[in-house]
Length: 223
Image (cartoon, rainbow, N blue to C red; front, side):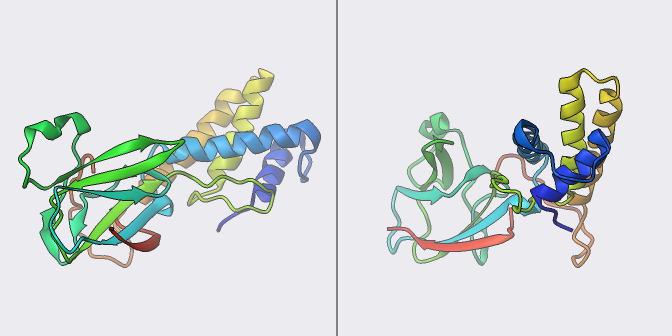
C-alpha cells in the first residue's frame, strides 16, 4: 500500500518521539529531506519496476547513420533497445568513445547528456518504418508535499531509514539497530523485485548487463 510523506513521518515520529503526529518546524524540513534521500538511496540499489519507463518510437522512413532520441528523466537502460516484432533487431548500448570501432551499417546506440540538461540516445542505422522499443529506469520524482505518495514498493523502508538518519544525527546508541532494520526492509524489497511476476511464466530471466519493460508507456516520432 502506498503511503504519503505525512504518514511516513508520523510513523517515524511515533518511534523517535513517542508521538503519533507529524514533526513540526525545522524537524519537519529535516525529516522530509531524510525521507526523499531514502527513496533516492533505495532506487540506486535495484531496478524497481516502479521506476521503469517504456517508450515506443517510430523510426525514420529512410535508414540514416545517426538518429537522436530524447530520454525523459533517464537513469539507465534496463534492456537492449529493440525493434518491436523483430527480437533480433537490437541496438546494444556502447560507450561513445567506442563508436570508432564500428562500421557505418552496424547497429548500436550510445547515450549523451547529464542530469541537469537531460539525456538523449544516439542510434546508428535504425531500421526504417518500424517501431523502436526503449525500456529504461528513471529517477524518483520526489515527495515535495506531505500528501505526495512514496514511489517505492515498500514505504516502510523510508520510515525505518528516517529513524536511522535521525538517530545517527543525534549520536544515539540505537542507531545501529535502526539501520539494521532499514537494511532488512531494503533487502526484502529488492528480493521481491527480482522475483518472476506472479502472473507470468516461471523461466530463467534474460541476462542483460548494460543496457527493460514499464509502468509508463509513451510514444514519439523521430524527425
